Image 1 (cartoon, rainbow, N blue to C red):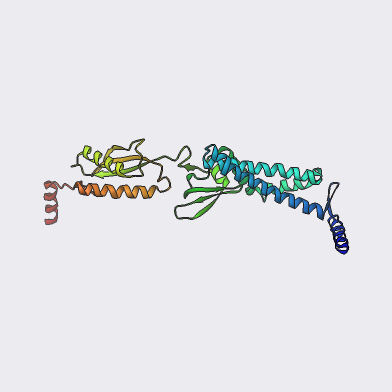
Image 2 (tube, rainbow, N blue to C red):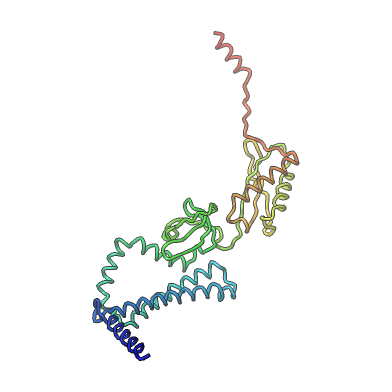
Length: 300
């Protein structure tokens, strides 16, 4: 038993000696192995606590108060970065690192940011602006450039957009600040769709209106409030142009599927009621005098 205690004491003394070995200096502070290990351990604990607090806010507190999921995640991310920033400076002060000695490093880092890290810094600052202004949030259905999909994650550098093809597109945050972004669910998740339909000039516009409203009423994805509307849009070259307008909150991420289902239903109800859907055509009228002149020219 005494030998075990002696061995533990010797081991502890050697561990203390190793931890006190100085590696380099920052200002007047000696950076030892023990200080580095303590700093790393404190940083790991800080990251764990920040992530845990973010999770508690999103999954328990914000849900209790009925805060929207995208909004709660944005607030949780802001709190996460705030805790890490504040905790990092507290750790530096606690372990006794002299911050005045980092002035040279900060100056060099500033030059690096001005050149090599410019894009990374731009994306990080853009990410903070996105989290505060919330032009987009997790769960929104957006269009940016050629990419259309749902926002699944907003990080400090980039935003992940999941398309209908189940492809994750990683978009730099600066794109959402500098480019035009279409957010289908910025205010709420109710969007309007417009489907144009052309019918023959021989058809009764009132009958067409009733048939199209019937299609809209029978589709479960179209809302009754606001009610769907049929507009008499135009007199086309070979058809009367109508537009079926309605609202949906369940097909916001599947607009092409909704249009396809509506078109199937319109084709069926038009077929059952013998409604003619014309194709483009032109009538050519040739005067008899022109034919006579043409015959005289060929005979001569």
